[in-house]
Amino acid sequence: MNKYLIIGAGKLAKHLEHYLKFLDCSVTSWDRSQDPHLFNSKLHDATHILLAISDSALKNFYCKYLDGLEKTVVHFSGALHVDGMIAAHPLMTFGPQLYELEMYRRIHFVLTGAASLQTAIPDLPNSFSLLSSEKKSLYHALCVMAGNFPIILWQKMFFEFEKLGISTEAPRVYLEAALKNSLQNPQTALTGPLARKDRTTIQKNIEALENDPFQEIYLAFVKTIAPELLTTEPLENERSL
Image (cartoon, rainbow, N blue to C red; front, side):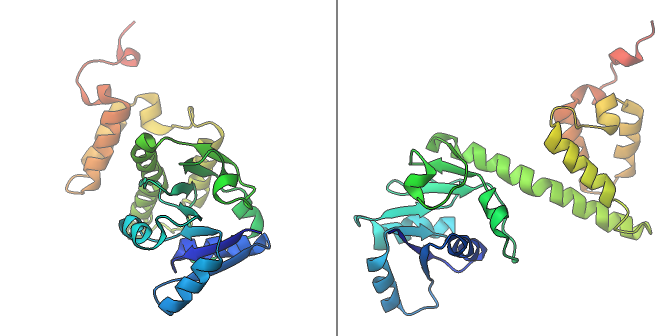
């Protein structure tokens, strides 16, 4: 029987423990607020050690307490690779509220250092992908951009809408549709002046953001997606027939 010991007390640790208990697994946890003697006892009984601690602490903790033990050690960092440990990064965001079982089952894991998720955490039925350690930094950068940058833009929108007297409920349908379109058709979801190559509108947008640090963000997106819109050269749709 597999016996899991979760190290950590953060959101990830709580979600992992909740999920494994949903699956009727044998699971216990330990963190620095507990008696150090309990750690030794729990470590002795465990077959799998799940390190849900910060990236900066992973290597030292492993080298000090776990290196050389005949146990499966798994960490969950998307960016870090440590020899001797399996990395099983959950492609998910974890908030303070615990999820239902079906939500946990849908989480995809990205593995480094193991051939399958069953090697790392045998009781999990989740889908997974394999990733080489050399690609982890790029993978994690993409996760950070996709999972956080849109939120920064949405927060800006809500903040400015409130100052304009527009309810923060007003853009809900718009944002829901944008997300749905992106998930269903990521290659064709782009809309607005960037999609239609509307240089005049884009220039007005940029001018409206004068003295706002988000002007640089707007410009960065245009430079990345359609740099020709920032030049004076006529576009194909602007050329006379």
